[in-house]
Length: 342
Ligand code: NAI
Image 1: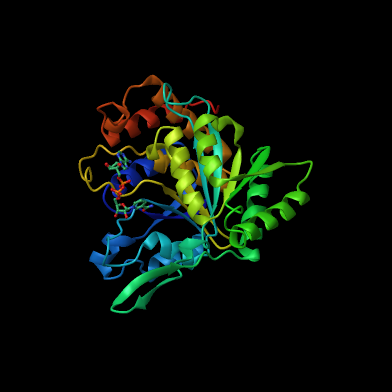
Image 2: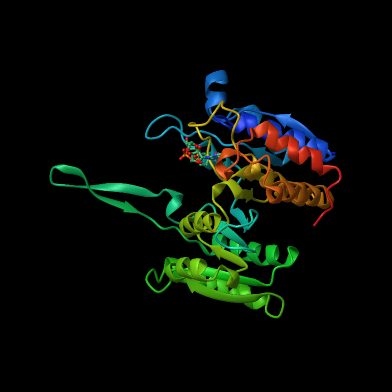
């Protein structure tokens, strides 16, 4: 049995989380769920967005599946997603993108973005400089790149490639312009790549060219490793290549914990209507099962999902159907026991 912390989240979160638990239970996943709160639900219930009990649970289980959490804009509490990444030093954000729905923009896309999750401009080191009567005349932000952080994310990408049967790692950067920060990232990348020579192919690409190449010919990519902001942007771009955020799962990984999540948000516009698509969170759950080495269960869930998508029945509204979250989930459950791993 694996102990897993589940944070259902808010908005559409509780509905899709329940569907995922039902599917994994039906698939025979050996998981003992520990349900905890975060975000708006926690704020309203216990007065803090990230309760100690939630942190302690993840410290114990070291694995969490997290539904979307609403982050108030402008004021209010800070993002719980960011707080969790910081607290557990989840330095690697892994976002696989694979075509699932036939008839989309591209068939057969299968690539992975490995994004550094703690440094770069998103480290949030910024300030204003006042001039004359304007206290905010200039805004400055620091792009923090460390040798340590670059080493561990590039090494992670190579190890990921090896353990997932992938052949190539492309390091994406802007070292032609940002010669110090991006230059250091590229320099470290090349050093680490040399250790994997003969086992994993390595190349590097400038980020703007990468954005274009992804649209022209996504098949040339396998694993992309990049710094925080480029990874944020490119991972949404590749989600677009395979049908949008509804098919995008994410894993936040570190030495102390692994947190798996849907990439989309809490969708307040459809919350409570029972029509949300649970696919993204289900794919995140599959990543979690694979992380736990429950490969057979993960493969059966993926097959059942693929069968439902291929059949084109029981699809939710965002996929052009009219099924509810429950109906979509039930269609997967009906297939999951007998599904043959692809
Ligand atoms: P969103 O991803 O929640 O929604 C964008 C659009 O996609 C909406 O029209 C929504 O109805 C639709 N959508 C999203 N997920 C769907 C699903 N599973 N099935 C069907 N349709 C779906 O993005 P938005 O509106 O910008 O953010 C809403 C809240 O979510 C914000 O508070 C934001 O901070 C938070 N958020 C949380 C994330 C997380 O917890 N990992 C990630 C992104 C946003």
